[in-house]
Image 1 (tube, rainbow, N blue to C red):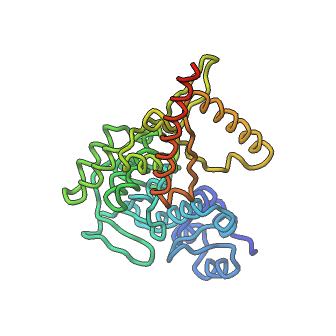
Image 2: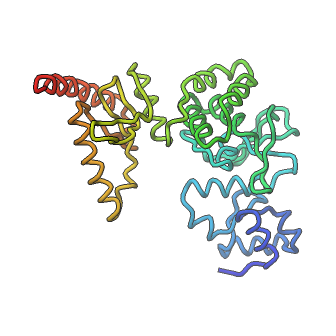
Length: 317
């Protein structure tokens, strides 16, 4: 790997690993040198005029690569442009789901209609404030970005983004309400439905998606419910369904390694205590979210078992 001009390396580091051709020229690095660094894989070209450090890019996780791409594209845009939609949420640390990460989305005052060219979608300027991330990157505010995602990517994407934004306190419910109301009428309906379904108590995209599935089935769902017994606190569960079934979204990562094995054993012990109180526990994984009907079937079966368990407990008492 070829070494970089130290001034350009400093500029890239100050901009979270991203820079533009204009940034390079400002530090005395011309197009020929940039092309050479791309060929020897010191730099990665995101699109014309937008670059990231190749080591940072290829060593990053998939979602982190998208963040780098957004940063690089913003550096290559005219001064007034700002990130929007899911690109803005990515920079703001708000979780997203079912959005198109093959494109970077920005807003510009220089366009009069939506444009899509080579992985870049440019939208007309919306209402809402402009935020600055890391002192460099401009975005729409979080509430506006959530409303845009709901209108563009659909109900579930909107719910996941709004849940995350509220949970991380990137915006308030009032700000989301105003942002949805500011959308054009034809795009407002689906965003309003997402807003009506939010629950900031959900702690991950997986939990948000699980809740949507349970609600769509017409089940009574309470989030983050504390369960106690006479001996004291048992735990806080992701969802209590119809007062009988505990549904936990299980990402599985917490069960890796030695500590994970201990955590799994503790979960099993807690599950036994919950069963002694008359509950049934259903665990949902990422893969299972792709089959909502199977999840609902398991919950209904668990509900039937819980009712039978409680009848048996009443008989014993």
